Structures are given as C-alpha cells and as structure tokens.
Length: 167
Image (cartoon, rainbow, N blue to C red; front, side, top):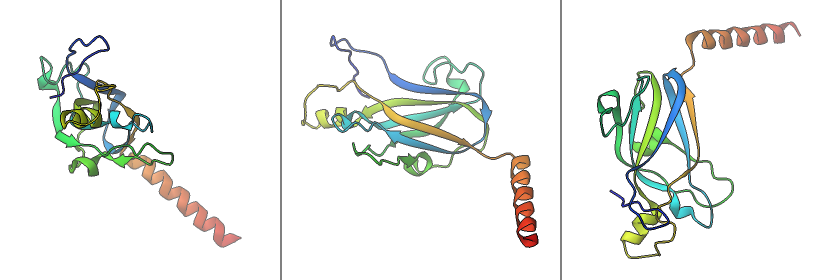
C-alpha cells in the first residue's frame, strides 16, 4: 500500500475516488482516461482495487460498510496516460480482465494502491515531488440500453428503410 503524505510531510490515510451515478444502472462499459499531463503524467493511478455497490449509503468498503460493497477488481493495473493530445483512454473491463457485474450499480469506488510516480520512487528513480498525487483525466460510464430504447431504435430504422424505398 502506498504511504500517502500531504505537502507538510504528514502521513494521510487511504486515497480513493468514488462516483455516485445518482441512480442504479446496469453498466455496459466504463471508459477511463488516466492522468494525462505531459509534465506530470507519472501521477496517474497505476494499481487500484475497484468496488461497486447498489446501497443507498454504502459507507467504506474496507471498514464498517464492507457488507454493502462488492470487490470487482483487486490489484488492477491501469494503463498510463501518454501525456499527449489525442489520448483516447481505455476500456476498464479490458484493463482489469473481468466483466462488469450484471447487477445494478450506483456507486463505483477506486481504492488507490499506487501511482506511476510512487512506483518510480520506490524503485529508486525520480524524486518525491508530487508522489502523493493520484488522479484521472476523465471517466465515462455507459449503461446497458433499456429494451424499450432498443425497440424504438429498431422502429426508427424500419421507418428509414420504408422511406428510402418510396423515394
């Protein structure tokens, strides 16, 4: 586990990022862009534990709220951002090597184990500057389309085919 410190050198607790989707959804995919600043690209998240929950107030997955969470991916290694324009990110399921749960999800939580910067420092390279920085550039959640939405798309397609035949 990474030893996180603030700018005063004081040790901090675990670092995490949590998203509340506002309602429960069955997710189709998650697209992630790791930290992508060319001057500090090593601050991207390298290793992470990913939890999901559908509870209204799930609490801490590694504490009192542990019964409200499902560990989806443990010690998952994320791809680094290249620090350049045109970065397209990566599919999280592919990166962690596991399919998203088929149940509804409201909360997703990344418990950060390490960043690319912290691993570089632990291997004896680089400096401690910015070692307590962990971040993502962007994340997008895509839900499984509702069957009624798919039916409407199908009907719209049929109408377009019929319209083209008349023209």
